[in-house]
Length: 245
Image 1 (cartoon, rainbow, N blue to C red):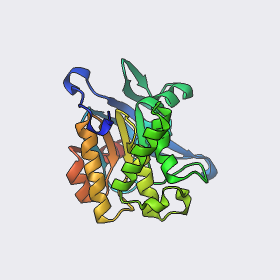
Image 2 (cartoon, helix red, strand yellow):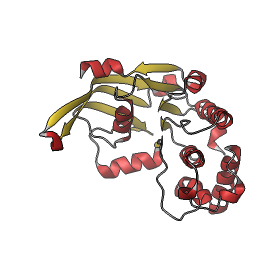
Image 3 (cartoon, helix red, strand yellow):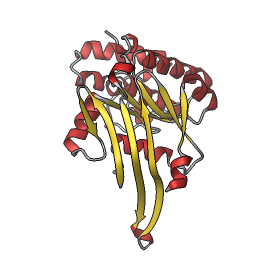
Image 4 (spheres, rainbow, N blue to C red):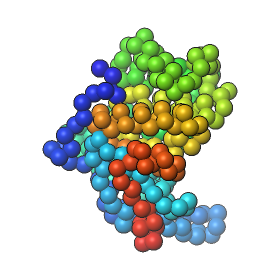
């Protein structure tokens, strides 16, 4: 079954998919004589299945840094980042690199601002790869990738070409398709519509709504006010954590 239309999970029975508590992070600028740059302190919130939560606040408040901490790209100085992975709960802040990789493969998806893929691989294969990694037959994975790229209005003539040759908006549509095609109970999104025109922003809004109905928990940064108001159930003001840092 295509997971975009699968049944949502019962959040009240399973509890939060993501629980952040007491998280603190300070960057040490070694090229500036060890100057310390506080980012967040005492960050805490929960995220449940089927809801979309935005990280809000002005530029520099720590939104992207906090998102990267949840994904494990940035280590934290204190606190816990608990992600429910089936019957197990994993603390991203303390787990091993190998366990973090498994968590990303099975549970956490990430749509960044920029597409980073293997050079010379065509867009269709880039999008299909997560499904193939999940064990979906290549022919089915490729067909579903094509359907998603078509829905995102990427011309079929581009599907066999490497995304590095595309415009910023075209690359972002490939990025979104790759991030959304496979089922991941927790999805992180960093300004997914920043490079898109109005028509494709609406397509992404529809895809996010389908993910929510499928029970996916989404944590994101949405600078586009219309998109944020359309898809987000609540906003977490990151400046509350920045002021405490």
